[in-house]
Image (tube, rainbow, N blue to C red):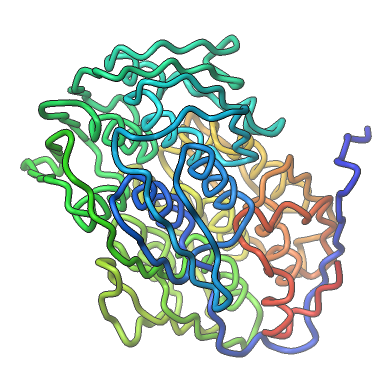
Length: 449
């Protein structure tokens, strides 16, 4: 049975390279931080300079949306981006529909901003984003008094009538989602009084770090069970501050795992963000026996950064606890590929959040593995992979479902497997990792799209 692909699809047949991967690379800027840098700079007074911004399609959608809301944004010749903010509470009503492309992060965070400004807006996205649930954001944001209208199930297109006099929010998180938490905090920025978020399971805290960076009054308390209580004082004066965006650890995952699996490889990945709420994959790979060292650790733009030195390694199966999932939620597809080559069984627990990513990423990852000879099963919200030798893997097709991380995971599978792997479309990898194929080729991958 055939499946429909976009007219501009770029299929890729991936074979194991004839030599080890080697070299020194820098992957694009962190996507999560790039979105937030543009949004917070757009709400601040003054001019913010941003270095290292991810120039992928997802982030460019955020830039376009903030321009439509009144921020002045330009790219300078040296790759630096400059944002002159419209000012908190002073956004203008957009003249047209805001098209967020494939970016769930942009859509959900922007919904928070729009809910607490007295203007009307409509958001849409591509076919993949229009299938993704927004109800998890709409529910708590409705507490501001904003009025939302969406398709069935809270799906885009989404109409938002924001409030000029929004109520502050007090939200206890029902799902471990940094996007929902950030949307609530962004709504609380323009609400008088205190907005409170109770987070039983900690998620990536880039929004909290950046809010402080721009001058917001925000505090975080922790409890004995590991939960967090976040308090934000509304209507601060946000002041422009320069931002240096580190390399994205989620993007670094793909050349990292490829280097682990291709025999004899040694790769250095520079300036990778090491926020402890983002490094679950690195912890897991070390538990599996990965030769993964962190060098030159430092702080840049309020975020910990370091260089990753990775060498090909014999991996073994482990149990990945559910509480680690928020710190590596985007990395499970490529971790599953690594597990397919490991000795023994790897159980990845608590993956319910994968069902609502760019695709049903859990079932799509299972399909990727099964098509290429891996032993995998799902029990509830757990995925269990039993490792096999490289010679038993490959030979299948990866159906990416417009999901950039599935596409890159398929490429990693093909580089390490004993038989070629067909990836049905790699065109949309540029949404998060522009230049992925040339960068991998610089390490010796030998890809030709």
